[in-house]
Image 1 (cartoon, rainbow, N blue to C red):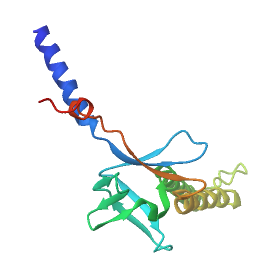
Image 2: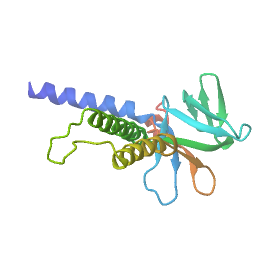
Image 3: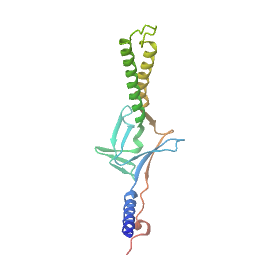
Image 4: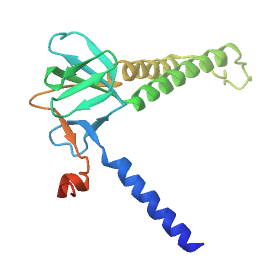
Length: 183
């Protein structure tokens, strides 16, 4: 039984290396940042072109042609040198923005409900009253959430001096490519 598991493990890892052998991707490199953003076949890329300087395109990569430096999509292709800007998204900023908006609305709602249903207990404590402090806390949370969703959710990178888009092919060569064909 142990030998069967060993053989199956070896076969599995051999198949896994064959699947991992074909890796073509493009990566966005930023100066001073060791983490690169990679785009593989099947991933979505948002970009701006030289010919259309005011419009961003969102496409899914179908094929990466390293030799000709072309990205192929469903309805056409582009050369990588035609891309001027790349847009990246920060999902955490959008989620945090919605959370802050929810907090602000709930804070103001509870403040208004507390003011409506507040009773005087006869000891000088008027209960919960809606005041400037409640409005400022709720309003600041709503405004901060809106700013995060509108301005911090996305980041645009201009390619050139401060960002670079590079195509890479780290495909493992076959034994025929290394040693030539056996005759």
